[in-house]
Image (cartoon, rainbow, N blue to C red; front, side):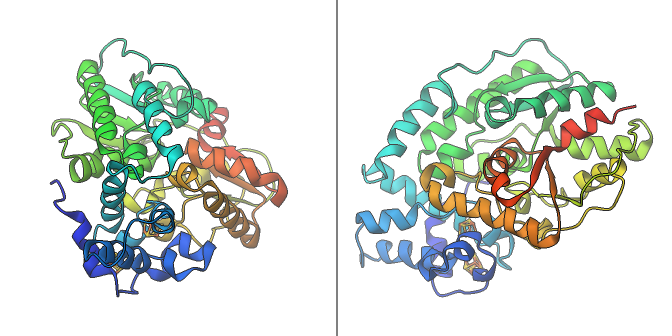
Length: 365
Ligand code: SF4
Ligand code: SF4
């Protein structure tokens, strides 16, 4: 169902402290303004005519990571991240958003992605199963996509690739450009229709969230009811359990951990599958980060890397610091954006980052 006037939720959030302790941006900045109730108070004050969208107020508005951690810990399921996106849309419409975001929006609108001046690939072929590639997997971590396809072929699947090189629509939605987000969403759904698939596979929880919730709630676009959505890790774990995927155990190595990707908190029960797959190939049990599973924090790969790269970097440092404190030296993840963010800063923490799909593909029997 589309959310109507999501911005009104800020009336409920402005004096509520119940999710303050889980907000990753609040953690790294230690600024009360940059916590859920801080953003609630900011937006509701504007709604009441108590403040204007000054440069300073807009700067604060664009420091939320749109990670979903607040809503996932809210007993009344208040859609604060969508309220913040809605307020950003108002600001962007007024021409008051940060200047760099307008040129970014133009690039996304033209090319479907923020990384390369290149059209998304056309869909070729049809089949029962499609795989949404997106832009991060295409441009930031292409080896993960290749490995995921190798694994899918090992379980008898050759999916039709859709949205290859095109953002799901999350990024422009989060930055306050819902019309661009709608165009991308419709193009992705056109690809899906052309594929004739009845199952859509996703490579990460961010894309799962976009198709399952963001399209309908923020963009008013229905995802086709006859198409099932499943993450590749969930599918592979099912095959592992059924004995239709066989993996051999890797040799010894340093202590390792799995890093939950951005948006994990927005997809219920998705966190067990990648751990089962990792446990099937690693010679020793993984250690766990503190901010994991239902309380996982993003590693700086959300829309924040475009809206406020400095705070996004601090989210990356925080994840790597969490890993160091847990005793891990080797980190695995399957999400291209998370892998890219972690890899950019891992050397200064003495950590090694590896793609989960690549590890699993290497261990195929
Ligand atoms: S999202 Fe829920 S828990 Fe968080 S500030 Fe709003 S009402 Fe409170
Ligand atoms: S979406 Fe994330 S960064 Fe934004 S208020 Fe909620 S928990 Fe904090």
